[in-house]
Length: 433
Image (tube, rainbow, N blue to C red; front, side):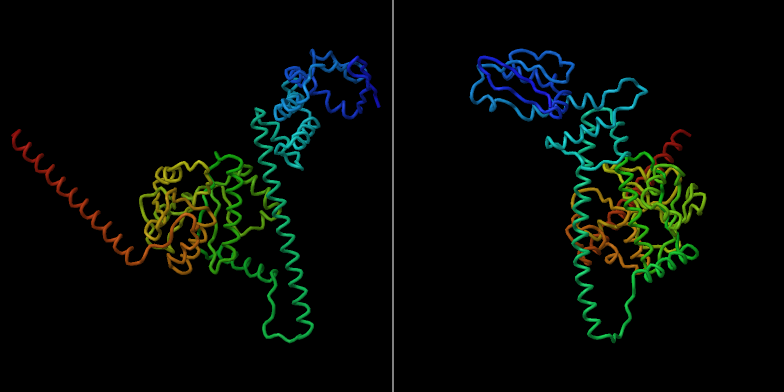
């Protein structure tokens, strides 16, 4: 322990500092001191730090009022402490030298202690990503994102733990019932047996199933958008595997070592090579005839009336938080492909907002249409928050009739206009002669 004694006429008691406490305070002391001088806690700026590792304290101001602590802005004090640690943690000695990982970890720990959003545990990969951010504000935002992600993960773990406890309790009661009566009419089917059945059906679909293509040529998404896309793709693969008649899934334009491929490997691990999915770097126009392809996009002017078992439907593997309109439609037009959108307006009282669905919702709608052909049953997978319920069938017929009438009126007007123009041209030709 190092002892620092200051004797004055106003202060006669010695002040003791623990060496560990001094080591924590020392990096930010020079930045804190001007603020403390501003509030009247120091008479002058503190002198430089002694070689023994202690601080030479300046005498406290005798004019400090009794309620001086009320004038101190604690949030500002915290920001000053953190700014000192940020400077130490994130400044580089040279462009080639990496920042001090230990100092960054210390900064994260101090942020958490001072009440700022920061994760309890952070991986080496997340630390490297944190270093790559150019500004302090962007780093703080990333730390807040990691903290919220960690909280959600912990909440999910607690939820799963409770569910597991409930399952264990249920299993105990079932075991007790089985001990009382061993005879049963139906045999229990275990999850492992169901997995064998699902895998067999998915393998059969790869040989005889209708193709369903996911376009993986959207590599300009952000990291979070890419993660959300892969999450939804995993949901799609699982839903298709459990379908009565699965699709033969194609992942087209998937570049090896590209952002999609890296995220898939990260999520699936060794199971990636065992999926019942055709993965290729080729485009769908190289694999299938153009006249059989239909690109499904919300921006298409054409309505998908029925599900065609002879068509090959394309879904763009894109999660766009900013909802950039026309990206997939522009791609389909460039490749001269037919496009279509789901008849959401025909069946729903739609609320305001984009008619955009997630990838897993799209595949569930297509699976239901493929197996039943019933639009109402298929569109049950559209989230209820997006609409105010189904439109009455009689009203649907009326709306369709009105649209057809408008289209016929427009076609009639176009026909009259063409006839009038042709007459004018004929008259002008005769006049010139």
